[in-house]
Every structure is written in C-alpha cells, then in structure tokens.
Image (cartoon, rainbow, N blue to C red; front, top):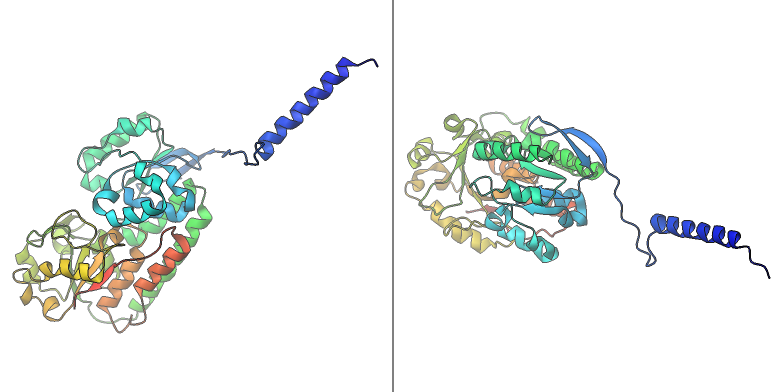
Length: 387
C-alpha cells in the first residue's frame, strides 16, 4: 500500500493542535484546571485620597499592619493566606491570640516574611520590593504615628513601581471602615462579597443610630484607655479618632477630646479624677507587657477579671463615679481599627443606654459575623463588665 506522507503529516499536526488547545482550555492530563487569572489595569481612589493604578485582581499582597488579616480573610475567603507575601509583626506581637487561631487553620501564615514596622523604624522597603507584591496596603493612621517613615516608604515603593493603597479603620472608623472594605473588595475582584459585609455592618450600626435619634438629654461622660501597660503606667486615651470617635457615635461624651482633639495620647491621672467620668472603658488585647489587660480569642472571663483588677484599684479611682457606680468595662482593643467596630458601637450604646439597648447582644452579632464571613470560629472574651 502506498502511504501519502503529506496526508500523515497534516493529520499529525492537526491532532497536536487539538491536544494543545485541549490542554490549555481544559487543563492537564491529571484533570487539574489550568490556572490563569486575567489581570487588567484598574484605577482607584484610596482612603488617603490618592489615585492609584494597579493590575487587578491582586494576588501578591504586603500588609504593613498584619492585623488586617481579618478583613482580607473575610473578603477573599479561604484563599486569603496564599495572597499575603509579607507583613509586619503586629499580629504576633500584640494579637497573639488571633495569630494562634489563624495559624492553627492556616499553618502557612507562620512562614510569611516579616517586613518590619513603620512605627519603630524597622520597615524595609528593600525587602518589600524583593517580594514583588502586586500591592502594598498601608493605613492612614501611619501618617500620624510614623509620618516621616511612612512618607519615605511610600516614595521608595512608588519609585520602584509598586502600587500602594491606603485604607482607614482608625482615623474615622465609623465612616471609613466600610469604604475601606469596598476598596479591598475592588482590588481583590470580590466586590460582591465586600458589599455583603458592608450591608451586614450597616444593618448593625443602623440599629444604634436609629435608637439614639430618639434619646433625649446629655449622654454619659466617658474615659477610655488602651490598657497595654502595667496599671501603674497610664497609656493612651483618644481624642476624636479611633475609640474616641466610636464613643461619640454611641452617644457618649469623651472627656479626653477637649485635650487631645484629633490625636491619641495619655492624659494625667489628675485630669481623669477631676473629670469624674460616669463610665470607664479599658481596652485589652494579647499585649506582651506584664500586667496589661488581656482580652481576645484565647482569653477567659477569669483572665480578664484578674488582669483588670489592678486598673480598677489605681490610686484615686475609688473617688470616681464610674467605679463607685460599678460602670467599668473592658473591650477588645483590635476593634478600634477593624471592621468589627460595629460590635464596639453596639457594646458602647448598651453600656451608655442600657434600657434602650437591652435586647442588643454584641457577642451574638460577632458570632453571626464569624459564621457568615470568617474562616475562623468565634471564641474567647471580647467584652467584659467588671461588676
């Protein structure tokens, strides 16, 4: 039989073309889909008012405040851990409870490179650049706490062609937290998911705002302190930022605001006693300092009470109405710069106006949020009434 070699060659080439197309369209021989993410240029306005152009969806992210892992996880879902290619040590240093819970489920988080802190001058732009991120997430508060270092890092990263996106959960938390979630949703190509979270957030805050609109009279005077140190050492309080902003939104009168305006600093014990607040709120976390107030995913009620007692027994506090009338509370510090601040707002409103918010349960709301949006379970102690 005579073989037509031209025909054989033509057929062979056709078969190879079909196989190649099938491989790229349907995946490899083991049935694994071909992985390819189409990226496109995107221009956004970040929370610092900057116009930023980047390729989205972003897959390689550096977090300059690693506690934002919670927000990233809520939006991105189970694949969030693979997206973080660098971060600072905040979540390990100040939120070890949260870090432990996350690492237990996503062990690869333990191997993420540490790029240093802007706050203490250890931030390494060279290390960030070497990680080849699609985006670096920074925070508006970093201009307040580490202005020169933040500006310097921003300039160097921009010169290297690395996009930087600012978010804000601290300076104006009850306004900018949802906006920040939508920014993150956009660059992650998860706008629908971010929108669901924002809808949940607004449902909760609307409960507070609508009821407060019917409350008459002057709200309680409130002192709030970050209890990150030993009770003998007064730590920062807040003007009209962060916790101070949430106090105001919940209908309280922040005694530190006249002194601090839009900053966060410690007030003197003498000033506190002279103001005689109706309510005292201490914020706790898994702080490294001995004697600091402990709250969080791994904190028990007994732990919170034992670490809170030293603060309640500070010299002069027995003369303050908040102590005499048993109105001293603890709350998880991380809620002042996270999407969870809706629950802080509810807790404050309940403490400030117990009758109007008798049916509101911040713990139950946070559990629902975790069940719906978080890859980790809700556990531990995040709110505490000392009396």
